[in-house]
Amino acid sequence: MRFSMLGPVFKQMFKKPWTNKFPAKYQPNNTTKYLGDVASGKIKINPPVPTPDGFRGKIIYDKEKCVGCKLCIKVCPCNAIEFKENEKKIKIYLARCCFCSQCNDICPVNCLSMSDEFLLSNVDPYSKDLIVE
Amino acid sequence: MSQMTKTTYQLPIGPIHPALKEPVMFKFEIDGEKIVDVDVELGHVHRAIEWTGMQRNPIQIIYLAERICGICSFVHPMAYCRAVENACNIQVPERADYIRVVHGELERIASHLLWAGVAAHEIGFDTVLFLTWEMREKLLDLIEYLTGNRVTKAILTIGGVRRDIKPENIPKIKETLKYFKENYKKLSHVFLDDKTFKMRSQGCGILTYEDALRLCAVGPTTRASGVKKDVRADQPYAAYSDLDVDYMTPDKLTGEINGDVYDRIIVRLLEVKQSIELIERAIDQIPTGDIVSEPKIPKLLNYIKKTAGEGIGRDEAPRGEVIHYIKFDGQNEHPFTWKVRASTYANILPWIPMLKGQQIADISIVAASTDPCMSCTNRVTIIDKNKKYMLDKEQLHRLSVEKTRRLMR
Image (cartoon, rainbow over all chains, first blue to last red; front, side, top):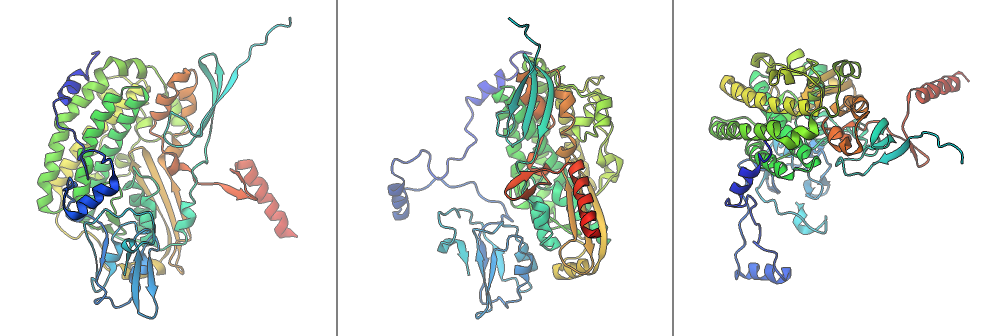
């Protein structure tokens, strides 16, 4: 067999591309203007592929429930959690988080949970979006 | 004019080079196009993982072990967890054993498909790269569906698994396996019958049966040379003893063993088929029960802290046997020692007989045919006064003698 891939290649020409064009189909000429238009509702973004159940995204922290037992700090593999001594509450640096959800498992009062938010890239690792407290 | 002496030339390739995505340095002795001798130099991606692990508690190390290798992100924590279970005498529930088998085999299919794509890319057949990786994408979707994320699964814990396979998940698994069975024929037709693959892989990079035994090759590399070696069959772990694993050697398909690159392709394709069957059988036979022996993590950590002992975890990774060794002293929470031997470590020496006598253009496909993973392998680097060097046996002996003299003083 010399041309075993010829059939699949021709079939591929009539198939829809596999890639989901997120957030826009083509690179916008002016990214800042595009983001502004999205914020004001002029343009709709191409939706991302839906995340499955049990996806581990940004951590949600219920501050009222937390009893300050420090167990999550003990098991966090990346030392991403800091204890605030005077408040007896925690502060999570998502820039260090590896999204293993071990803190969710160990929490005795279930004050931590994983959301499906995954758009977390930022130029500043200590920006407000990346700190959960 | 004096007579020209016959001489060979030295050709250094690496550490950063086109053949592999990871850094490794080859020093070739070249006579024209032919490779006369080869030396391999490692140690460019040492990350001090074992040392880092020795500062952490056993639960934290699971996620560190997961990051030893991006592709074997299930097998390394699995070997580690089994080492801890062995050291502390923790019994894993039967259901957890079956779930471990399902995830281990899913990872094997993903790894072998990735390798098949890379091998096709190395010989310049990029259309096949996209064919295999399209299939792999379906598998990663299934892994994401079952574990939450595509690559770092975070599914294992000491004494079981963290997420169950629920009855409502089974239709999606069966659907993906059906897709794989349908596409497997297409894939094996391209890899085994295509003239391009045959031209480049038959009779190339031969590892004989004797060499494979002598150099302790592991995994598909050794099975392609006819050595029947597979941890899943030799010392069955998890639920493999119930599932009847067979050694996949190339003579099952072609009736002969050559030990060349073509045979290594055959072995990996046969293993993909075997893995699909194993997952199907595991899902049909899966018993009901708990998925973890001790759900309360603080209690588990306290128990491990009080236990003194050492344990070994042996696993069949997609690339071969991986061994984790761990020792607890019974006083500290963090382990006293943690040692990792990744499978590529055993597959480096077989490169030398494989590469000798080959042409320069064959280097990349022969080197890639063992599915090397350098960042898993690098374990010992000594840094002293900003000079980096690796220790060999004589230097270690010398250091040992020096220490004895120092102590005698």
